[in-house]
Image 1: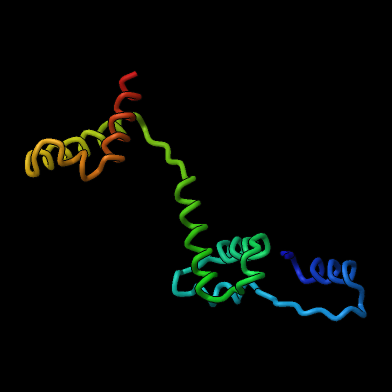
Image 2: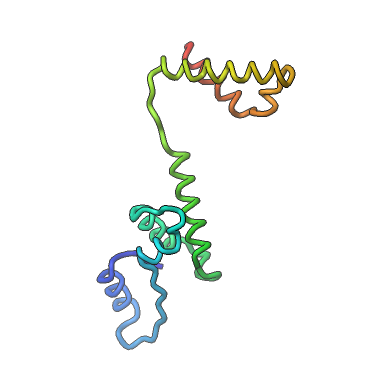
Length: 137
């Protein structure tokens, strides 16, 4: 698979196969990707990343690629980006947010019984505990 501009792709094809070799080429453009995922408010930057992923991913060679696969790729790229995103806030602001979260969890325990919040949100509970410990340290 290859990703690039028209000149780069044509040069690669000519160098790899020669001008007399029969080939079949499937082309996905930025516009094709954007049309396929327009219901997801895709940006040009995201469409470019999906094109790169199409060039890198080998599964579609065997199974093909269509609108659903493009949408899945966009969803995966967005999820990866959201997980890698970092935010900086002051320790004071973070402590205030954690106090509110702690109050909410205590309310849940009061209404649902001791340990209700931990049962409902175990990962969040552990994250709050770790961050509070870090702020104390």
